[in-house]
Length: 245
Ligand SMILES: [Zn+2]
Image (cartoon, rainbow, N blue to C red):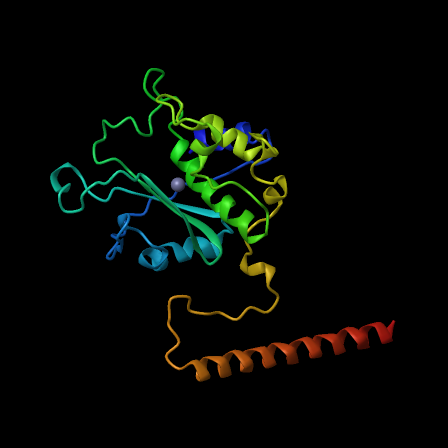
């Protein structure tokens, strides 16, 4: 993570900085999600109750769930396919990724070694960039897909991986016949919305399917009316205050 912090700053030429908290959770995860393409993974709903208390204390912009899904004795229980990071997900608007810890502690995936891997933080940066890629799309900025490096002549190299691609991606320096492309630097100015951005928030259970849509809508209208009354009340107070002056 400390290498990720440095990489964010250096590869973006200072446009993006990161700070992080590292939280070790001992509470067992009692459910996993499954996807036909990627196999088992940790979805926000699998750990919502575990992470909630931390999110209430601090406003985070991204969550990396680092988890060992199997070990050497149990590697056949949950077979290891080739993904080590899975991103592009979100939890209440916050970027959410899985980083899969290798089953063997001898793996060099996350270790710096001059002869084998000098960019071990790559998976963290890659998954985080999936969130920025997605944000760019949602805000209507053109950007190449994060996985389309080969289309622009970049190679996933042995010791440094796709470092050059990420650097050019983050600085909008990918050369094409029609000029340079990449992440629009405006994207660094957007942060996910946090609860304190909303003056009157209506708490919703994100994973609850509405059993009765009419009832759900009625509830929301009722809440909205309550909030509206609140606003009117507040306005009146403000008016009387200014009249007083
Ligand atoms: Zn990816």
